Amino acid sequence: MEGERPSGVIGRLLGGVNRTMRRLLFTFMSSGPIPQHIAFIMDGNRRFAKKWKLEEGAGHKAGFLALMSVLKYCYEVGVKYVTVYAFSLDNFNRRPDEVQYVMDIMHEKIEGFLKELDMVNRYGVRVLFIGDLNRLDEPVRVAAEKAMEATAKNTKTYLLVCVAYTSSHEIPRAIYEACQEKSGLALALNQNGNNIDGIVNVEDVNDVIKVVDLEKHMYMGVVPDPDILVRSSGETRLSNFLLWQSTNCLLYSPKALWPEMGFWQVVWGILKYQRSYYYLEKKKKQA
Amino acid sequence: MPRALHLLVPNCPLFITHSSLPLFRRCSHCFDFSTSKPSSHSESTPEEIKNDSLSSILALELYLRSDAHKSQHLKDMGVAEDFRKTFYRTSNANIVFILVWHVIHLIVRVIYLAREVICAIESYLVTNEFVTTYQPLNLNRVKYLGIVIDSDEARQISEVIQLLDWFSAIGVEKVCLYDREGVLKKSKEVLMERFSSAKLSNEDSKIDPIFTKTQMEFEFVSISDGKEAVAKAANLLFNKYYLDGDTEKPFFTEADLSNALKNLGVVEPDPDLLFIYGPARCHLGFPAWRIRYTEIVHMGPLKHKKYGLILKAIHKYTKVKQNYGS
Image (cartoon, rainbow over all chains, first blue to last red; front, side):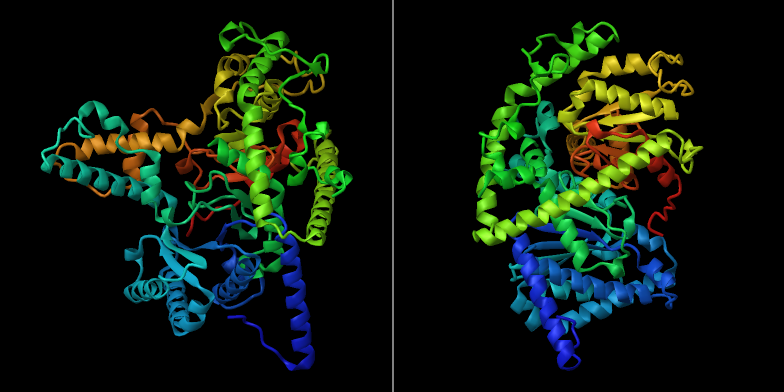
């Protein structure tokens, strides 16, 4: 899980010094408020491969290594929920061979993850796959469901992987689920022979579905809203990610491409959050 | 902890609870900007403001500030109290760690200050045409501009008007103004009257006689047009498909939501570019379904707005290439 390759005494010594300095810095930063939930848009894998003249697809593999490092730093500093935007519904418009390559990487990594379950459960990481999982290939979907089931009892930290997800799919779906719930409730009331001057009364229907009902049925309703939303590669748009949940969220766009993301971007993001903490908390309370 | 240390880091949460530090606790809403003294609050309402004169703008500002002042202190104290509890719960109690944390944030503050100075110099050079990289601007891609302003800053209507003057001079035609609490909605008549008439004379731009102003169309949006609008749309869809037990109940898509919102009167397009004027880069609840692919740029606090940086941001946007996921 650490991903470090000790190579001789000096290598191990430098690695140890590096780890100690990192943990010391995180301890100092923990004197201020630490975000509870950070979300990442993993943008820039293809540009990284082009920049370093790598073969196609190698950027995504490098991106996976960066993901592991970033997760490690987030959990070390004390972040409880980490959400990553792995695959958007819009990405299905890419070339079929590229889509298949990404699906194959996801399948390979989830299978690898399932082999290390003991270690994962020791760290207490609960993995959730968020999105329209029916759009995924059968083997990927089955592996994802197995991973969710295997880590369901962990509560220390959460990793939410958004696959086949967009906010413009999530919001109408939440409306549908809310309507189903309210209609089921109305049906139950009718069947019990209760006075139908309840929620099915025509004059009252305007108040049937409220914002809290929609938020309950969102894919992301299982975790609190993110505190920081990080998009790598310097792009400043959200690309249909967590639009509903980012109302009081700090948006941060480091210029590094996703495979180049690491320790300093996480540190700088948290320092920015600490600078704006009072203001964002005030806005949350005013809501 | 020495008080001097708190003064060095104004964002430090600890000093906020020290009301004996008047410099950072002064109510910014009670200031009479003509005399620089605390003033009594104006009781005039927006309906009484008849014309676009300076005095009416000043009166509108005083009204907006008095509106906020009534509950602002109470809210601030409540927030400060909660914040202090959270801070002490999450922090490491060791005094050395807290000191080092302050030093780290002091260094961060110095870095931001240096950036601010560089931005100010850059804006000066661009505004006075020493640097012409960002001109001429191609406004074809900026068909619809969104501006998010922090509600407290939006109460300074004169600043908002100056900002809109700049956009009008640049040539932006359609603007969506958002602030969370709907402060700008209260100033709708004043702003629309000033910018909707085809006033191309430059009586207000003595400094920049070459600028001609464009007539602008406005949309005013607040938090009630965001999540609550989606809840209303959900209720519309519920009425349409779920009240009658026999109708088929489709799985709702983006198109269904868009149609329901259109029925509620939400017909404006998505902004291409969103400028945020406030202390933090946060869209503060701008209607979620409208910013899917919108470029979001943080321009800093409204009082530190810079014309040159607006040109730079628009120019940068015209160079952006979007794949829309593919």
